[in-house]
Image 1: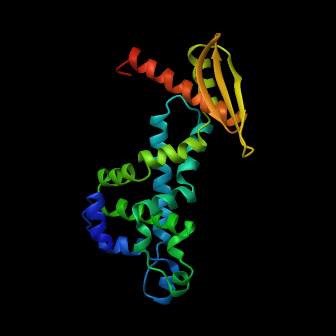
Image 2 (image 1 turned 135 degrees about the vertical axis):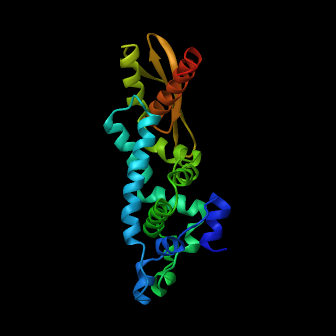
Image 3 (image 1 turned 120 degrees about the vertical axis):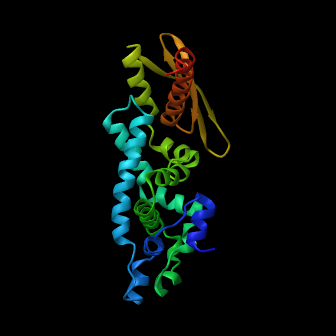
Length: 237
């Protein structure tokens, strides 16, 4: 299967200008060996800017109460090299990359640096070739899929800070994190259990291999409960 059929089958993208996509998948090692062939570097430059803008818009809408610093941290987690490379691996872009002999020998199609570049350049190719609706659909199925959001956004997400901001904004109460359990196992690992206490009540519980991780999980649990209550009280919100 070539890239044109792949895009049609997996993303319902009917390619108009094939050259955008061939250029997006051409590494400079290949273009150096074939002097008349363009490589993906210009498209990568454009794709990086598109992703920065689209991810910023997505996060702005998804986290209406988060400040600029927190949103910047989330965005960095999504558009960083390892995340974009993981997306390329998941959808199978690596097999379409055109590489020079040296890069083929060193398995360049498995390198994070190349795979992330390819995702950016492919995003730019779709941007240039398709309507905005098609680009958004591509991003929904890749960057904004539940797999990516759950796996990578959680790593950057400071649940304690978000909970603190939410509580101060709506309740103006103090939060306490209390260790209620600590287990040591035979393999020398430890598990902490922490409760989030608000106005003398337990609002969330979390477990982790250290105190900080347990507190983050407890804050995440508390936020989940608060958001569920908010949806029940304000179904149209």
